[in-house]
Length: 435
Image (cartoon, rainbow, N blue to C red):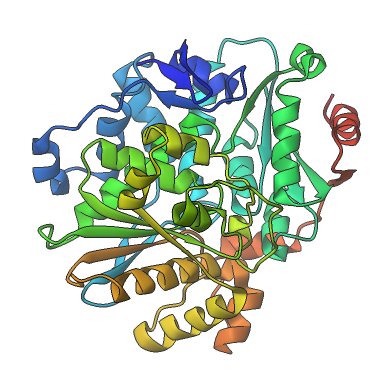
């Protein structure tokens, strides 16, 4: 399998090169030349497969330079925690993606990527630098995945004052080969710094560099696994399958689109967004107009220029009408999000985090406007509510139970490097800190 750049479909690289480069030389994102269809027998018999076996059956079509034994090992190490489908009502369920080490869905992609890169670089002498821009959960998931990996250093860039206290503690307390950079700006500034670094020849001479953001194709691939895992757990598979995806940089949604292209019978994706409403406006008028991101309580979705938009339009050959037929999208304010957290608790007895609450609101709107309400509707719950306890506890007037692995990091010492958002300042801080 070869991979092309979204900026030039004539570019063809191997999976290994796509993973280790992270981003194409022309600034595009890598996509597979083709998306193979899984056999119908796979879907008929999907309940017989373990989560790890599902991952292997999907991944083997894209990764042809790792033997079966090593690929299964990499997947088994990454998919070492469940993704249970929890019913809220007869036709609405929540797919809990927060049972990994950092209590966020990004653990799947980060653990997979870390084990994959370690495998690819096991014989390399040059040190590797992983650059990561994070609006919250990506950084801690990547830090955990790459922690103490030999020959690898990680630079985490996060917007100062714009992640939750819990998220910041997860980002800044590991130490050793993990370095946190607190950028005086917004997530989009962090993302831009990462992209600029990839075109810096001086840094390239010092390090082999790659990214662990959802711009890396190896982050997306394992995220597609749990869409199949959700379908496996649905009891009546004859009903239409719709799925609401809290969306920021749109990597999670893109992974679902890849799963759909492989034959997974998803009738509709619902891209649930907060006040950063670039995508619903694009569906409305066909014009993509990035803008500065707005800070919200669902901070992992605070993205004003989603990188994976390039992959979405590539999948659909830039046909906005086809995108509209596959994806609906709606935007919600913080006030609506807080009300939704309360509503989900009162109606279903379930504690949902702010991102999942946005997903709930978008699904609710979709079902209200849908003629056939007899569907299998799934909301992706992307983070444990205790990661946002200052928000959730206040609105519910109760204490959210915090897993021990999260509470333990809250008492550790924060270690971060403060930097301005211009590239020269960041590069100086990066070289001084890491070399």
